[in-house]
Length: 589
Image (cartoon, rainbow, N blue to C red; front, side):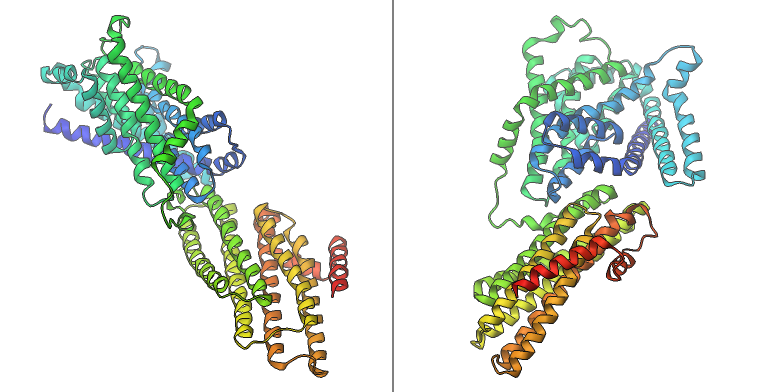
């Protein structure tokens, strides 16, 4: 094997890896929205999780990509740690589909149809059809499908290039001796792990082994421990991906490493103790692509079947090894860059992150209201800390969505993205107005002022209405309520009526001298800020209705016009709800 053969081998490996990456990325784009829907329905049932991991990995042809996505889900709070276990097990099984496809190179027949099924026959077919779809396809999905087929073609080209490069080795004595040495299980396991860790793809690593098997110099007994090591080496991608994530995401990566390592070591011990050569007649035979693919599949299926009943033990071990750190910021990893390449799932984690942001804004609203009747410096400091976090969230989430907008996303996802940007801005403004309310309470405390009993009684009615509209807006966002406008807008108008009434009564108290001017100024500022909070809750509902309601499927839908039509009294249900709310709250004044 000369220098040109080595170059050809490296070039083939590059093509193989590029083909896998191209195919995987395109498949993720095609299946992104479907993966999101399956994820929403995924329960804690570990068998369902295993099947989910298997199917996803079989589709996107990369267990590393599946595991990295899972780590991103956990990091973003979209998925619990317990849900990841079955998915990780299933991903290991799903990745064996690639090696089963590559075994087609073992087909030997003069039948024209069987010849077409070989990589040498499929490669030009995939490349030609893929090119036509990619260049001539008008729809995005057709272009992505073309990308998938080109990826398959490049993958097969890389495989055949590697096989041609190593072909001279079939007559080289030192190469045969090398694999005799690999019959030492420990050495084979280390080699498999190191090579896979370097190229970060178990599919590519097994593909190299299958290419080497074409020389006829690779004994099955030497191939087995190498495959065991490859399962360990593939964990490097997940481990690197977990750097900088929260504790549960790191635990998910650790479970992946622990599962693969224990499975490989258990099989290695079985080989050493049982000595398979004594009862498996093919143990020392020359390995074929099919034998390698079959063992790779059987090994991963058995590992998953054995480990699934003991999933809780793996969970507990991960929690024992990776403990809660002192002062660990759980809010720091709500948005994960690992998911940018799957826009539908990236938007799902944005939804979960924005929901957390809305929870913080609601916390500050409630805190600011409580400070009016009972001011506390520690509570004020806590409120300001949460406000700083809200500002950081707005900047980070907005930047993330802008970066996501630069990806190739569908029209529906573009609508979701735009709506989320508006909702994030509304939530941040709610936080600002809550701080304004708290600062008014602080000023009154410093000046040793207090509202009259009558003013406080009236304010409490308004407080309950504003708390309700905030609660309803968050609930609509959480449940993707298509009728969000109809739920919040009557309440927002009722709050406007309340604020107007409280201002009029305040003016009357100023006239008869029962209210101090300085305290009255603070009251007016509080009323204005609470009214604006209600306005932003109304804005949130407009965009919630737009992105999850009619606007999701009808780009010409105008949620603002819908809102204006409600104000014009064109909806009987709206009028009934508005009248009911007005009567309820005005009675309490």
